[in-house]
Each structure stands twice: as C-alpha cells, then as structure tokens.
Image 1 (spheres, helix red, strand yellow):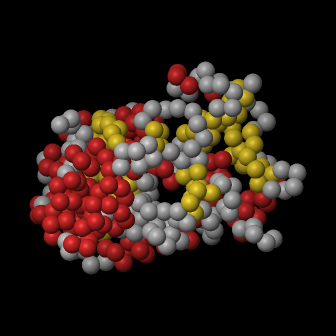
Image 2 (image 1 turned 135 degrees about the vertical axis):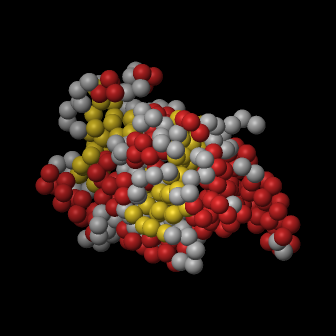
Image 3 (image 1 turned 60 degrees about the vertical axis):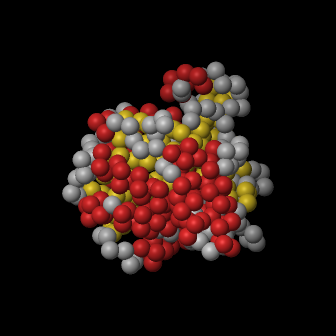
Length: 366
C-alpha cells in the first residue's frame, strides 16, 4: 500500500487479529520493533536527523556534567572503582565531552569504568566511533541491570521521555485504557477500551481523582526509576535531565517528531520519534521508595548556571576566534532559555542519591 509503512501494516494486522492495542504497546513497537523500530534503524540526532539534544548544542553541557560527576565522586569518599553509567548516550557526544572535562580530576579519571546503556545498533556504532580513542575502559549494555553492582554515578539526558507511556482516559463510567484501533476504513486511530478499569482511582494521586471527563492520565510502567533508585541508594548518585512537569497532572503529552517538526503520533509508525513528558513527581516517588534521597527537580537553566555555564562560556569565547564567539553565546542562550518553551525552562533536572551523601552539586541553594 502506497504511503503506508511496513510497521503500520504489521500493526494493522495485529489489531485485526487481537483487537485494540494499548497505547504503550503501540509506542513500544514504534520505537523498538526489532526490524522496523525507530531507534533500531537510524541515528536520529543532529541537523540531518529529527531532533537535537543539549550535548549536540554545545560541548559545555557534557563538560559540566562530567565535572558534576567528579564532584559527586569526592562526596562518595573517592572510591577506587566507580561505574560511570550513561543511559541513552546518543552519539556519545556527552560522554566524550564529560571525559575531556574530567582530565583535570586525575583521581576520578583513574577510578572510572564507563558503562553505556543503549538499545540502538545504529547509535552504538556512532558511540564507538566517537569514543573509540578514549583511554578509559568502555562497556556497552542493553539494560541498566546488566551493569555490575558497586558504587555508581548515573547520567541520563533525554532518556526517560523515550520510554513507552501508558494512557488512561476518563469517561462517564470511569477510567478506560486508551488504545490504538482501526476505524471503518481500516485506518489506525485512537480509541478507548470497552470496559472501565475497576478501582483505577485508587492508584491515582489524590489531586487527580476528580479529573473531568475526557482527561488523559499518563504513567510509565517501566521499572527504570525503581532500578536507578535502588542502584544509587548505596553510595551512588544519578542526574536525570529531561523535559516534563514537576507535579503529576492529567494531559495528553504524547508527541511525535520528524525532521525537527511535530507530526501526528499515528503517522508513519517506526519513522518518527514518539515521546511523552516525564512526570518528575512520579519518578521521584519511585526512586524514593527504593531508599534514594531526591534532590529537585529544578529547571535545567538553574542547574547549568549553578554548575558554572556562564563562566565556562566566557572562557571558551576568550579562546575562540572572533567569528566563533557568537556561536558560543547562542549555545549558552539556547541551553538556558527561560521562555515558556525554552530548553532552560522546559527541561528539568533531578538528582537521586544515597541519603548519606547530603546535598548534590547544583541542587543546594546558593
């Protein structure tokens, strides 16, 4: 069929055979189908891809996170062997910049073994090319639980938002699971499960139990927040940066992006990046339940400024050719933009750590 992706044909067949498909299953297929999944088949980053992440905007982002990790290592008691873990490392740009920055912290540099958690063969190849000349020991894994136990520092930038999200929609008789189904013409459309989910209100935050009819509630059932909380609760720490909301709320945040523009979520399955906003309150609660202390969330702009991005930009401008200085200034502005849809405000940062470590760098009020 012209204009219909191979994955959409498979999704249509699955729905025709088994009935409406939960949104979480649809998103999972779009992103990680073993043959046609978005992250399996391509490198989506940069000007020639579908979106640009903070590490691709400027080297300052990765440098500051590397120095953050070095400072956290000192608060951990400077263990001789520490796992520096990145979840969803993109092209390896952030880790490359972080490793360059921590050359000034020779003790930390000697102590780390880098573990990269990546499901995309295309991106793993890019990471190996980017980091191939690094002198540190590098390991790749498909999941966090594959990383050996021990003291760990975890970095995750725009990782949680890419995890498949569940959706429920409130109707007159209660909350129904939002599904993907077929209309009379055989096209893929959104719908709702036939029956309400019994007692679903009991698992909702109290503030959302009186949500009006038509409201959509989202949550992630992936165990990654619990796993991070468990890993860092014993002499470890994590820094998670992503776009989302500080407090749990209703609302449909499911979105698709292609060629740096928004598109309909049901268009071209497997050909678009499909994400949803991170619920930082729910993430924090999951990590806290595993013994982790929670720091933040705070705006990305606030974190980067506290970590010294303005001073770092000044140093780079001083060393740069005159014609390159406006690029550095533009990157600083983009990363710290506090307008409603600016990266500095839309993106939030949250720290998770062993409670014994006390305030984490960048989260303690100045």
